[in-house]
Image (cartoon, rainbow, N blue to C red):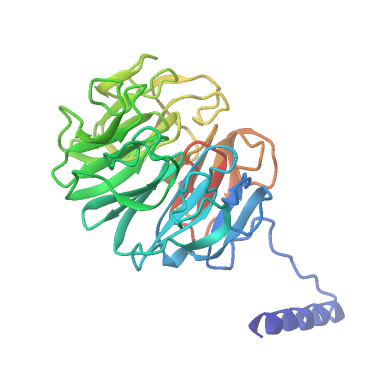
Length: 394
């Protein structure tokens, strides 16, 4: 009824304006959304945009039934057909999932894709979530739960690789007092309350940081890494923000992901060079960003589509500054693209755009920021698929 009243009032206003010889201005093309929903855009081959379809979207669309005010944290995982999925941690401690499910990553007891959010049954009291390529993690009571594929031990349950997907949450072994979790493509990270970091899963490029390249089915502490306040996971590399506002990195380095002026992998943590005063840390699949205490932004890693935002397509093995945009509060990287949330609640993007992942209504790539959501959009957080082409604002 409210919608009908609003439309009726507009029609009366338009008729009156015409009678008076006046012209009503229409809303701008990028008018701020007037609804409360989580917004999603980009590739939708697995139903990861949560709107009940599998049609790609080049502008932000509502995730069905998922109000941003109800969401505490949102994350997205997956890669290519039938894998990309979303997870939303609600303020009531429950978790909703949607999208691809070939590996059981929706945690609903099936391997059927679902194009809209639904609760992960029996999961409550959750305080953190993370999505990998084909598995998911949830933090509850200081302990970690996992579900999905266990092909490389990424579930951390210490059991032999299951004959099929693990479609319900199981316990990650030997971890308690966990503060936060992160998920790479096929490995897990846990930051404990004592500032130590623990890892498990795939390790072929040293992404577990334990000095080897052997996979592990249970967590092990990353040696020599203490006083950590945040962890982030790329696809095959990991980052840690320390209490002194510097950054450590380990794992894949061929794209410059480690920021240590080499393109070699490292099986142990190394210092990201020329980076101090870091207040926020953000990892894409193969590129990274650091937000500095003075408001500046530094970027490093792969840059084949201009995803670093420095106006080039040159990979950077050490951090470089971004000249635009200003007023950045957070950033997130997907496959060849980056999204940034600005202080005025606008969302901009740059890099690849072949399926509309920049959200500007086109499929034209851009080396400079284009607008996905305007100022005043209500957005306070972002998410993107671990290593693919979908974006979320909430």
